[in-house]
Length: 97
Image (spheres, one colour):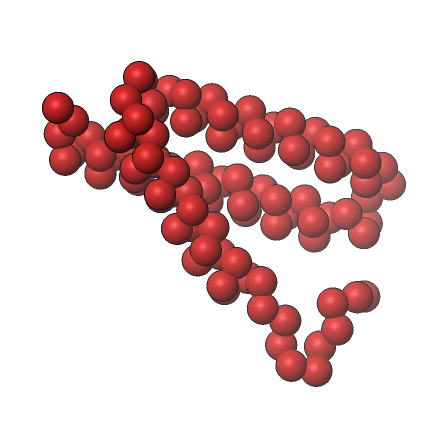
């Protein structure tokens, strides 16, 4: 039986991983235009973010699908929040520099 405290911890850990993953993605996208080697930036950013998330989910799961589900829920809620708040382009603004 999984304790509610462990599920809350898993949710919080998943939220933190989501925040790190998607803020890293946001920073990568913002730096692409000014990067002398954009493909290298994309590749290393992706590998680093993927390693963080896969390793984090593996550690938090510890053989329990309930803990993994709580962490995934936190990760996806942070994603939805960031897309809602960072993904909007003001009216009249263009997405190109």
